Length: 376
Ligand SMILES: Cc1cc2nc3c(=O)[nH]c(=O)nc-3n(C[C@H](O)[C@H](O)[C@H](O)COP(=O)(O)OP(=O)(O)OC[C@H]3O[C@@H](n4cnc5c(N)ncnc54)[C@H](O)[C@@H]3O)c2cc1C
Image (cartoon, rainbow, N blue to C red; front, side, top):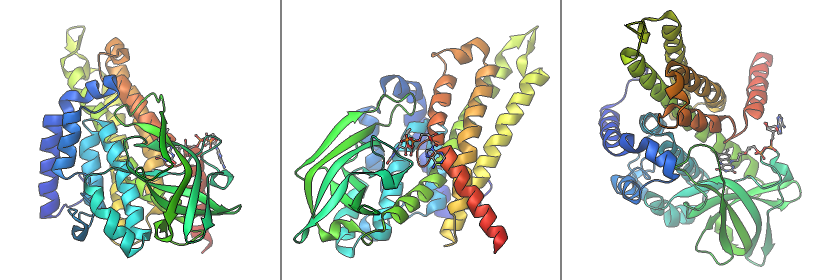
């Protein structure tokens, strides 16, 4: 751990690791196989207060900062990445309500974020990267907004009950609205048949003449791109933590296996080629961890964290896949087997190069930032 945690953060870390060791670690492979969290675990997650972890105390949350929330996501991801992924989708959405909603909307919805899951919805069937190509829209009628369209691939889609949705308010303008699944005209659609992060549903929603009052608009008309970008940056810190968690998980499996597996009467941990793979995984984990923790520190300090958060996710997304692949090789044939957890680590890690901005788009963002810094 490269950061000094405060006393409350140390206690939180202890609580989360105890919880995750008892309730999550033993069912990591079951979650992947069943493509769901057991009902009991879900109740425990809500009752233990995970959903309101970073929500300010005035709204019923625990008021922890980004250092604590990313540490929590890491601690969970080491045991099962998709539990961490579900919380990541919730936290980044709640963050946008906190930043952009009117006081009345915050008063109404933020206390619910301790027990109802939130999701952030931008992607449409015809494309995710090009947000200005979206067609789902909001039209003002009297004092109401009428919302229509189809959104796909929402982390927690189906499980979430409250959504922040990016909608066109004119051909060149995106705005963000808060929508509740209880509203007439709101429907959940299919769940994606994704290859990894199997505990987390990723699904679609339909809006058919959903009517919301003016105060369901987050920020101002036309601020949707900014809010979507902010959601990405908040999410990328947590995605970095997930990448580091998956990498640590791969490292533990590889080390434990290599210590007990023998070849020519010697544990394979004695072989240089195996040591090299373990070293590569360990270096990757340390690097990803330093990046997401640095982004979290910048966020807590009120400084710009977009670039470092994007670095954490873009580097971490690739490094965690490579790390899990190294671990697979250490386990040989068993690494390639569904009876061992390494193969699902690769499938889980692979999501991190797509969700919250594709790797390609992130590379462009980082390079623009780096060039700009050198022109100032
Ligand atoms: C596990 C998971 C969870 C997700 N969760 C959410 C969520 O909570 N909310 C949500 O709204 N969406 C979510 N998504 C969708 C995700 O944001 C999109 O998949 C992503 O933005 C890419 O969009 P696309 O799939 O339509 O691919 P496209 O946009 O069609 O891109 C296809 C390929 O072209 C490349 N490309 C496209 N445009 C450019 C460009 N301008 N420059 C360089 N390369 C480009 C992409 O990098 C990609 O390789 C999730 C996806 C996954 C896999």
